[in-house]
Length: 152
Image (cartoon, rainbow, N blue to C red; front, side, top):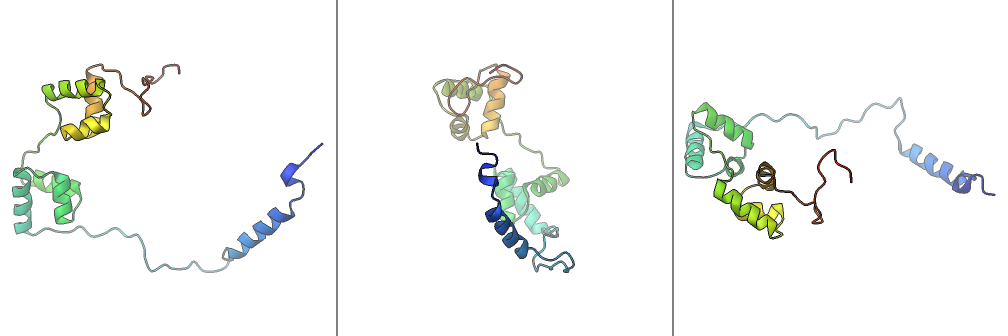
């Protein structure tokens, strides 16, 4: 009859814990200051000529992600600049005929990611459009997805 199994003779575990404890700083020791701290960075200010370039880039078809990368700023900052200057934002999505194409490709067995890549939109956009149309979706293994609250 084994009462304790691997924990019956804890000498090895005690030694391992003592070694770990030795690596810890003592409770009275001052906290070490690291040279690198995560401080909020100061927002990069674009000059008026850069703002004009950003707006021109957006109007010529660049995405907020591409412009953020190009100017070294967050995509949300790009959107804020565009809003501040009254630039109408594009809504990327799928036209009704593209939704029909997405449904067809998805029913052929394409993944949401592949359909999205083909139509140049995010896979979540495809998923949302399929759900709007009542198309049953699959899990990552190709099995029919069980709706939330449903039995498995």
